[in-house]
Length: 248
Image (cartoon, rainbow, N blue to C red; front, side, top):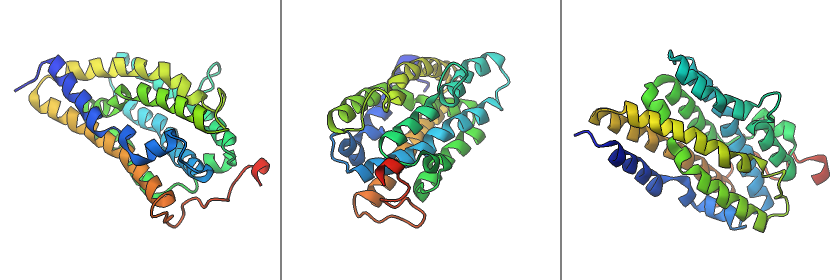
């Protein structure tokens, strides 16, 4: 039976309440000030791979969209990350965070040292958006429903607990406080309109679950490599390497 839009939205929000990565132990460690400088650096390196892949994912999505109105609405997501002449962009802001935590930004930008599990999870998300239905691709983006709260908590926690945290280093998260609600308002309305059968609603919900798994898997990889059992796989960034000149 097809759920009403209100009931289906509640179903989607419940997925976030149960499965969003704000419940992961690494998340709590980071926001509480429990991470060492090297654990923070490992997070910055690995999360950059995700950030840099978002506009690639969105470009893959737009290449399949025949509706000009949908392409126009989606285009700002690429500009928000890649930047424009007037807007620095999220990728550049993330590299400022890399500077602040003492990493060589060229190394971070090279995407070397990213954990294998991070690559697998993020690449799987890009393929998902490229290959699945447009409805599933948009639904997967709805983790943004839960993002503003995590960004606000992250800003508060990092400012309270880490010397590197200031308005410049945390500018990525401050910008997402306004960008994410705009994106999700459009995406949620589009999914609620187009998921007009029980089968489509099930597919959209499964897509959102998949995306929460992608985010959770990235934190699992970080926790296993740099917290416990602290076993860094071959190719993963080794603490003490690729620091900025100021840190060496």
